[in-house]
Structures are given as structure tokens and as C-alpha cells.
Length: 250
Image 1: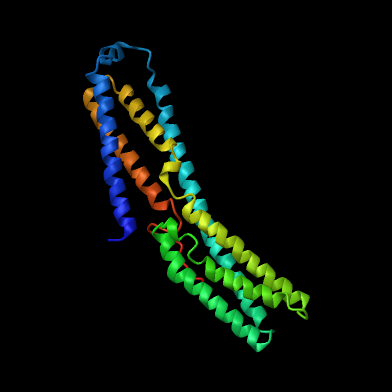
Image 2: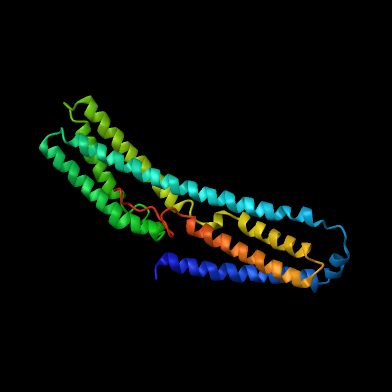
């Protein structure tokens, strides 16, 4: 079983237990707690007003889902841009002396091997300790490109192409690391538990007139919350989940 599958199963169990506990606590508070009688006797609650929390919860979930989708698209664009920069270096190298071509090809091979074989697995497993695992190979490639670009008799067009391409690769590496490690945690979205609680509370209050209806509605609302969190977790990182961005282009 993969690490992602294990984390997903643990999330499902945790969210289910927490949501069920909160739903039961709300049910108890509305029906058996000391304030239950006051709530049942109150005519101040307007169901149509409380339904606004359902709208807010749906809006929050859809916003976060769109946020995750944008990151997925950014990860794809980032990979394509870096691949194009590498292709530029390869095509530019064809007009260089043979020894420079060999040096560039060797540096590129080492870098790509490090990214595909070491960096990408670390990203998929969310191993922050290996965030810079391919940096030595990139720095070695950067030195090769810089040395060749700054040769005394180097043509300005070749110099510009090589330096621009390696600069693009450096920028894309920083974006990839940020997408992989800086934005892939549900802990950064505190609105989810807050709006989930408000949604369950609203559902319970709206159905004060019928305990049976309250049980059914709280169960359905809980299922909706658990399902929404599961799908958010699946899409939270563009490099993990059921449809991850893979280094096929590289």
C-alpha cells in the first residue's frame, strides 16, 4: 500500500470520527442539554436565514477546489516550460565544439536522472527533508552552462540562449518545490472545520421540530462534509493523488 493511500485511509477514518462526534454533540445539545428546551421553545430561528451557512460551506469548498485545480495546471505548465528550456540548451549545444556538447549532455543527463529518480519520488512522498536532493546536480549543470556561455570568444546569441534557458530552469525548480511542499496541507485551510461545524449546527437547529428529521439531516450533512474533505485531500497536491503530474516530458 502506497504512502498516499495510507494517508488517505487515515484521513477518512479521522474525519469520519470527528464529524460523527461533532454531529452527535450538536444533536445532544439541541435535544438533551439544558438549553434544549429553550431552543425548542424559541421562535426566533428562521430556517431560511440559517441555510446561508450551507451556501458559505459550499462556496468555501468550491474555492479551495478551484485553488487546487489552479495548482495542478501550474504544475503542468511548469513542467512544460522547464522541458522547453532543456530542449533549448540541447539545440543550442549542437553548434558548439564537440567537447562542449559532451559536457552539456553529461550535465543534463545527471540533472535529469536526479530529478526523475530522486526528486520526484521525494515530492510524491512529501519528504521535506529531501527538498534540495537534486540541487547539487542542478548547480553542477549551471556551472557548466555558465562556463561555456562566458567563454571569451563565445557568440552573444549563444550566450543569451544558454543563460536564459538555465535561468528558466532555476525559476521553474523554485516553483515546483513551492507547489510540492508549501501548499499541500489541509492545515492551511482552517475554514473547513469552522464552516463544517456551522453547517452541522445550522442543520440541527433548522430541524428542531423533528428529532428523526434531525438525525437524518445531520447524517447526510456529515457524509457531505467527509466526502468534500476526501476529494480536497486527493487534489491538494498536484504531484500526488489519483491524477498526479509526472515527469514524462522530462
